Image 1 (cartoon, rainbow, N blue to C red):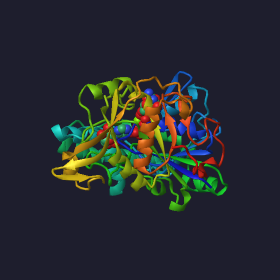
Image 2: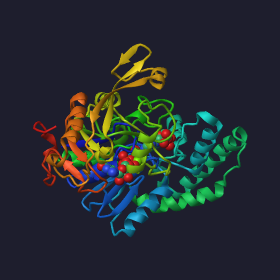
Image 3: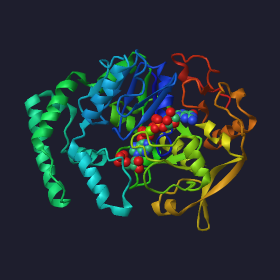
Image 4: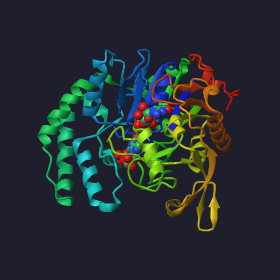
Length: 443
Ligand code: GDP
Ligand code: IMO
Ligand code: MG
């Protein structure tokens, strides 16, 4: 019963969408377990591009059952729009399943996200303003609305109306902003409820049944470790747990339901929004990564900050997620450099740390200690086997593999599906059950 988790190991946008799409061929179900439409996962195939914010990245395969688990927060308007887009591509969205227990993002959550950001002034977090923090705050305060509240149309309408009225008091009294039209929002959400009711189910049981039948279930992480609410660079984080362990609470499975944990790691590092980023290159190098890597936020279109690869962060991700393998993406973007740097430790005053510093103050003031490796200066975007890569590129991967202590299962050299090197099958088609064997990986 292989349960396979795919998580981001940096600050998000590592290429999880691409990796999940590739692995989905071999899956039965793809389950989102946390986050909301702050996520933006991109899939590219045959020159087409699909950007997903809520629908799981396995959707392009007709055999996949896409599941939105209880840990996800759902903006119904965004979800319905995404479902329409997918339907217009000729794909059936009738197979989508949404947890009764997923919480609902309402318009006041987005408004409050913006107002809170503005009130922070220069120390704003740079959130996506999709209402993520305020919705998870309501969930924790036990004042949120859940998808199951949609089951009774008149009760749901009334709950939405009351919630808007209550939040209007905060919006007007605390922030001095305009109140929202509760009547209009209640009507709008009643309409969404009519369209989404039929998709709701006990997704925890659905997932468990699939696992019990021995089917492959992929759990799709959003964001990345460094944005984890507990383990990331708080307060510059998102409002959910992004670690692999969050699968249990967010999908309603147990720790023993997880067999494999794949960490997606970009060959360099990017970050959108505010907060410390030790290897950031606010210079020509960073600009070159940004341009060649087309580093613009999938959700907000903001430029992503770019920097050299950070092994301290990766080792932290290996530890917290108990990663079993790595997928290294965007290696092609580094082809332009004469040499490539890798941060192997942090210097704080006269101390050198190779473990992630637990104190925020240390992390925000540390200096990266780099090792410099030769670049390869060759186009690798057509590589489909390890042997197609120049020696220097293979050495770079080997360096990461050895220092992380985890094998690399997949290397990505471009956004398209075929721009991928499977190290566990020599480019052969994926096959059921293969995931449990990776003793003989070349890296
Ligand atoms: P996610 O949030 O982790 O799913 O990542 P995003 O989709 O937000 O951002 C990754 C971006 O890089 C997308 O535009 C992908 O199409 C693109 N991408 C993924 N893998 C590669 C790769 O190996 N090389 C290049 N050049 N682009 C890639
Ligand atoms: P995917 O799944 C990159 C960042 C925001 C901001 C911080 C808090 O595509 O990797 P939030 O709206 O969650 O309250 O914002 O988190 N952030 C992401 N950055 N990729 C993401 O998702 C992100 N989701 C949130 O930019 O800094
Ligand atoms: Mg993204």
